[in-house]
Length: 106
Length: 160
Image 1 (cartoon, helix red, strand yellow):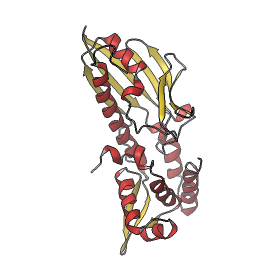
Image 2 (cartoon, one colour; image 1 turned 135 degrees about the vertical axis):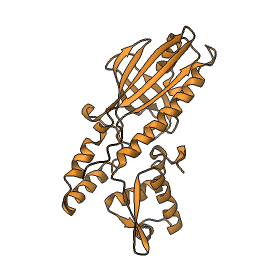
Image 3 (cartoon, chains in turn orange, red; image 1 turned 180 degrees about the horizontal axis):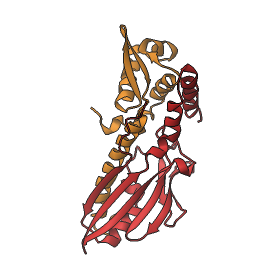
Image 4 (cartoon, chains in turn orange, brown; image 1 turned 90 degrees about the horizontal axis):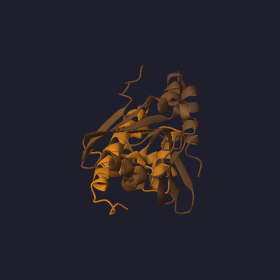
């Protein structure tokens, strides 16, 4: 389930998650490899990867017993979806702002 | 390998109960008031979002430490009917300084009645952000190309 909190706007705001992502950018790797090179527990790595995957930033492939994560080569599709959500939210908030009585807009 | 070619534009519209002049004014003067808060690539919180009301001006965020993020440039400014801006943030969440690689978004204000306005947004030319991306990807025949691509991609994140 993709929620606003899971867009790449916010997915990379967390420094640890960003570190996980940067490591995946360097080359495909497994959860175990990530947990070994980063000061993060394996369950925490899995959690960060889930957020990155939901945000369309990484994809995973099964390789034997483990999953290998790499960056999403179709990132542009994720970017488009993200912009679509951005404009939906912006316009909804804009409607509230514009329909306030004049003078009350901050 | 051909790309899956997602539609390279996003369209959204909304109807607001306000005259066209007010609809335009609020959009351009209060953009920071309704822009989603997580839309921020500064290292600090945003103090204000400024929309410079002229062609060649910028829509930018100023952080509480004075740093600035100029993430959109005004390409057309036609109150109260239309604005056109570039979108200078790439899919890697970095500022795109090359205008040729920036997408653009157009906002049209249409008076449905004297008290009601339709606001239409089209964010288009998204493929421009992907030119470097796809170009590199298409050129990737073996590990060599793929590795170079990843290094370039990684270098985008090493600043700051």
